[in-house]
Image (cartoon, rainbow over all chains, first blue to last red; front, side):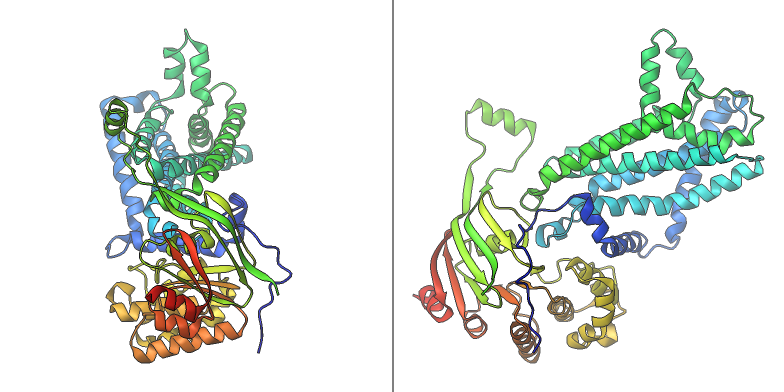
Length: 290
Length: 239
């Protein structure tokens, strides 16, 4: 009879995790959680994953008609359609990842209350699901910009990757923070919806950065603040990667764009560290508060 | 002899008022009423469980046994005292807690196995055994929401008993399925015991508990009032 020996094992305190380090040890579980999320989302749905094309397509058409055609923004901006879509794609990734991560702990309440597992897995699974929905949109963007005559160089492609990295870090950090707070105060959900709505308008997605620079020319520090927003940095890097190489190159790029890209990454990493800290502080109370 | 679970002076309080609206805060401020009335679910509980031991946690409703089990499993953390556990631990606080109705039986076995701490290779290796034990081979690729409650419980229990943790926590799950299936579950639990795994069971089925566990701990309003032979524990409760 084989017996189990645990004599050599040091006793540990149950329920005390190692934060994000635990996630690395649970990659298989993370993979299954992502799969579950996708399966459940498109259960009994005819279009299934095609919805991740339909939604941004409609959003794009509406924005393009209202802003590009009616407000005539496409007259001042070369290839406005590509410009618009490359920003929309970034904001969609942020919005979906952040929104779902915020709801992930409460949404998985049944599990959180009954079985201990590293709870960081839930927001991280939300981020991965958002990324799965982001890829087809990215594909559409690439096709669109190729049609417009896309010729990117390596630096610009690297800029695009940096932008994705910034957005994922930021959305995950904020998702940890608000996901944990949401357990105690359900207000967080509504607050996050507000942030996501405002995010589209507070970064140069629909308009170009020079309009903001002109409007804020008397208060240059406000424009610096605007550029320090990691989402502004990510959107501008995406423009540089996917839109700029398809145009004649006559549009001016925002000042110190790459420097602000790295600043945006630094801000996002700080937010991630803070989000993880708050999450770990509140984690012990999840089960009794849900 | 190595200890498996060390519970030392553990206490746990729950807040009774959970309202967080601004209105309630203002009202209680004006009335100068303490909003944070607490309820002591556990107080100064100390229990040592040796490796390979099977312990039953007994007590009436509200005595704190499920809370203690949740503290051991790590779902909740104690407010006072400390708990230490040696080795991997799997808690079945509720059968099928990690099951999702929209997934098939097969997908749920993988998801739940992973939630209970099995790695991919182990689940693949154990998959056929798990399904055979649950006796629902025919329906394994059907969504779980179409299962009867008995089928659901059987599959959930089967996943759990094949997770092979060093410490096993079980809350009121032995009432699974019909008589033959219960016998099978009991036999499987004996196997788990023979393998030298530690077992902590919460149950109201006193006869069953007496059969499985040699030791019983009786809780009353958050305090340990008896710790010894399970027969004595059952007597204490029936008194």
